Length: 200
Image (cartoon, rainbow, N blue to C red):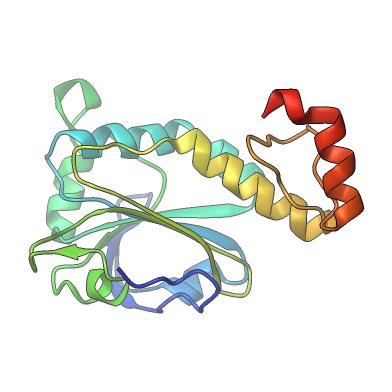
């Protein structure tokens, strides 16, 4: 798999279903983010098994993303019509309901290929890319199809990046927002470990 961390996120334009269920025929990643951070969230396919649990989990935390000024974007190889149909079905019947973030259609597989997450020229792995305010990938992770992602970990990763951008400090193992971070120098490491080594 291609390592994209530290590189500009591959831009793309594709058809998408927007939060209000409208069609956006030329959804463009860079234009949509417009200087905000984004979470690009590849999933396997509509009307599947693990996928709806992930998208619903994002939707339940959509205000947490908004509070951090981060825009979630979901994408799969399904058509926009499939996305729309899936949104009309309640979660208790296997759908995702009215999720409040774009669902991008990657029927051509070009976006998935650009991010190197396509399996057997068929569907995408469970891949997540955190894109910063200038369009650079700062985190990527990929799960095999049977393994659902932890949305709270996404938020923790965002918090860590935003804390670093604000203070210059780095996030040690297990760091969560509100806890002490570390100055990125020898003195900072020694001070942190002397205080918190039992918590690691």
